Length: 624
Image (cartoon, rainbow, N blue to C red; front, side):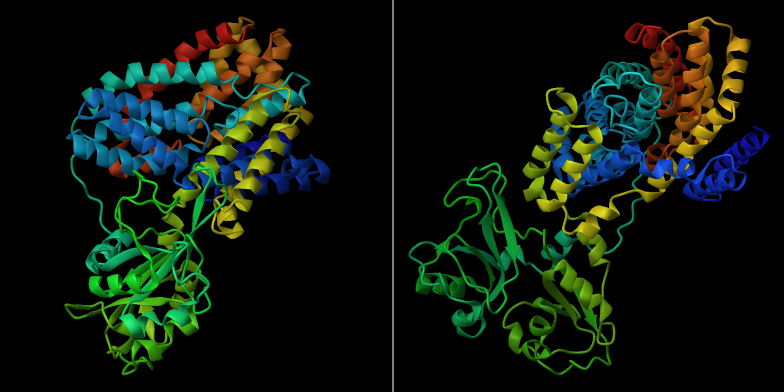
């Protein structure tokens, strides 16, 4: 018991200290439990095979797909626009939308998604963004209380209950608790933010880091010279290749890409695939060709081959169908992107023409334009000779642009195009991601579907990858927060060690002895102990340590453990008094220009009021 207490104490000290990553601390504690023979190797490694840990990894992938496809951004931005110029309405919508998204994906990802949307809408409405960003962070944590998968502590108490032989909680068993949290949050934050955060967030200190894709399109006037042509049933290009057309030499045009509709004939499920036009690309009926060049040359090409000139209101999804989402001749960036490269003075391609430089043959990229000092060259590029210091705008698949950045002898790639690629949303896959998400929820909610929650999450994660909601499997793996997964898997055996050595019984006995057998007093003790611990160590670790103690306390007093365990998960998640207690709190700190004292003034009263409310509400929802 003494060795277990020492290991636990040292772990807590290192978690609070924060100089060593939390997952490394958890692994060191795990190794110490093995060295002192407190746990067997099978017991110590049981966390890594726990279904909750696997579910957590799968949820990161599902959440990543929702962000990668722009589904969450699409929904949230449209709803928030309903606020108009009203600050109160915008505040309410921020709280509601953020908590709704936070119910299904990580609170950190929710804040990262919502922060720029809220800042831009606040600026457009003339509203002080500083009064919205702290509520945004708090609402993401409140939303996590609405569903089983909303936050790791919910999964932890579920595992604790089922491990003790109790019935598992349902997917929406947490919903009443989450709704109470949001209601309390709205009522408390509305006056507090107006009193204490009135002067926050008025300045915009955000610095631009490199040119965005839209800035490059505007700078090179790509949209002004971009035309869309549809291959119809009567077109002469169907069955021909790019080489057969010889566009550059015959018409002085550059074929930038081909859009090809794929998938179901159902309007909602149909998607569009981008293809960079290679020499062996064979055109098919229904293809949309993106060409750049002089308008009269484009018109001549269209007339010669009986191609349909598309106006700004034609959709690529179905011939002739109007689309409100298609703004005209614009470049979208999904699988294909653009980037600038500057030629080195010692480059071996200086003096050669763009065509002879072989960008298309060697790297499968197009040169769309050349910036030479203050001049922009956009036409007849194939014959243009390259100069030292020229900046070339290139277009290609993101992985091909990545290959360019590794060829650093002749040029330097400006900016960080691969990071931009990671931020580009595959919004044409948003309907697919939505259906998979709904399928996962249905499998977890309806009892007649005999599928375990972990199985439902794994099915959804694999479907997100197979249906192309990620660019690659590697992109899916990158969405997993391995630090959280390893931390959770490493700390779960600690709770087993606490039970095995009698530490949980000792601590729970002390709590029961000190607080008495009154269940409300015991609830308050467990809730505020957990709340205090979460201010210094992560909510995941706090929940892992406190859940078995709450379970043992309930057994000693002879009451249901469910309300006490809900007290643990709510207290672990509702920590607002410090900017460092949760990642969302830290994320909004610089954007809102908050100080530590701002969190004390606004977050501490909310944390205390939330605790008092929960001590009385939780037993009503889940009787002792």
